[in-house]
Image (cartoon, rainbow, N blue to C red; front, side, top):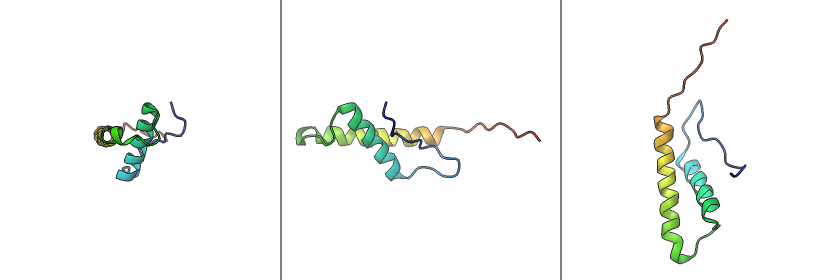
Amino acid sequence: MCRSIKKLRFDDRTPTDEELYEAALQFVRKVSGYRKPSRVNEAAFETAVSDIANTTRTLLDALTAVKTPKTE
């Protein structure tokens, strides 16, 4: 997969909508092979980006962090 995909799960904040959109756009570009789709494929491309961004938000909102207790 793409080496430049960055982690979107942070300890101190949730990712912004823009960060989610950019990650989804990068994924769809990689999978589809299009940097910019033709007009005939533009709607499908944008729908995929939106769906992936929304699904990623749902995933990140549902994850529960399990932290190991610190021992002194």
